[in-house]
Image (cartoon, rainbow, N blue to C red):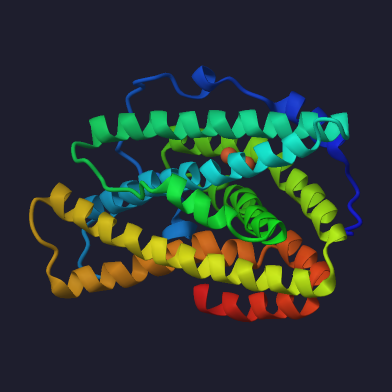
Length: 305
Ligand SMILES: [Fe+2]
Ligand SMILES: [Fe+2]
């Protein structure tokens, strides 16, 4: 359906080349360095326009957002691995290369979750203040997986291509960020690059069974999931503001709080929604699935830039 130039065997071969061990990336209890920002400037660019923040507070806000960023991946990877377990199960007596690619992907996502949880434990211990992050991953996984299989693959494709693009366009060449945080994102990117391709193979397979009306509906469902995701991002911003106030030890004041809320929410929207919705592989897949749906996504993305 998507006429792809790679197959499951290519994904397995790439996975075998880049695979890493958890302890080689981060050991349990490893201390974190808070002297530099965690997130690249490009992903928090909306905060540049917020006046009244000194450099230390800006860095702390960046680190709070960096912790939330990793938690959001840990959060969404919960449903991705559950979905891919189902896809693997369907291939048990089918294509052995697809089964290998899918089971490796499940194992890698479990390892990524363990890494992000490890990071969060060090962050909570070393940052000095407990920072709130979204916790209801299982409920969100259940909600996402209640959608049609094509819609679930579309949001998965979005998330995994978005991860790729964050690293190649924002993280890789940013020389100002914490080198350990950068290395963590580099290792995640290495393994995510074949996940994004496996998603395209799975989407191609599923969409091949679906009629046009089902494909069009799946794009609408995908847009609906993005809307729900936006609600979660707003919840995360509220927690980030509370974390910043607790680390400063004093209230931010109404005007500053509302300026940060607006800028942070837009930064998250651009990072988690716009990046995926405008990714060329996501767009080209959408165009093949549902040209009408692709146009809707492109139109909606403008508000999230
Ligand atoms: Fe991952
Ligand atoms: Fe992944």
